Length: 340
Image (cartoon, rainbow, N blue to C red; front, top):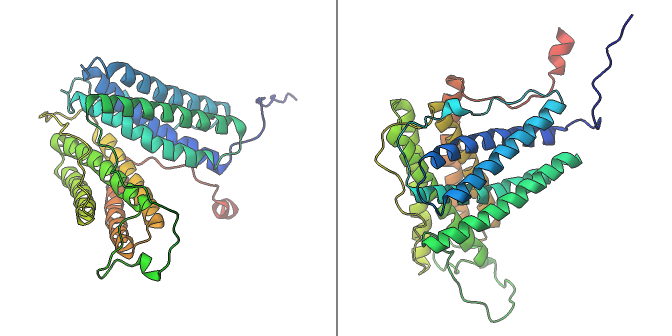
């Protein structure tokens, strides 16, 4: 009787749920980024941005390849993700050149948040090293994007504030009030969260405007326009908060959408990107909520989260209905095995 020799791996430490979940999610996101950057680069004419866009594309492609290599070594199914089938390079440019810079800036800013969180959940050293490298490269790319945006005059710095004269401690319970007059000024943490929420929602408005402009399916178009309106409502709310504090509202980007009506992306791709934007919105608004110490901000953030979650559910439902939502790996159904 002959026995087949089992596959010998460099290490027999299998991937845990946190490593599987992290790698699986990043694979989908990076395969999406590869598609988006490939399209942007195809039409990009600004010679100053081209090298940075090529570097960003190479980094995302390398991340996809590395995750694929890890999964193959584990005999783990490679996620479908997104491919050249989701991109139409023949479509005219949907965004002006400066949007490529905005896209690199925003994806790497969000990447820094995501990779640091994901890395902290992983203990297998090769996977941890991978996420550490991702965090490092995203930080570098973020810095390069900021530098170029400053050079081109398209980056709006966060609001300035006067330095305090001394260290102070909170003296009154009313520090957290703000519902009925007598609001204290925003503190530095609250102000920074408001600024970056405005910035992120301007990015979402541009994405949604471009997608709505090229989408032919009326049901999907209406859903995209609803998401755009939610982002615009957040921008108005946060800008009004700044104006009430005698701080100027902020507009962080210029109009970066062309007049093209030809979709460069599949409907599945567009809805998947909106699904990711919804997740990011819920995560970062929740983060802002956890750091806010003024009651009116707490109320505002709670209302926003409820509205975005309702929108996210509708986005999720239509993706499931059309069989566009790839299922994350599930744990073994022990009850089913026992009953079989």
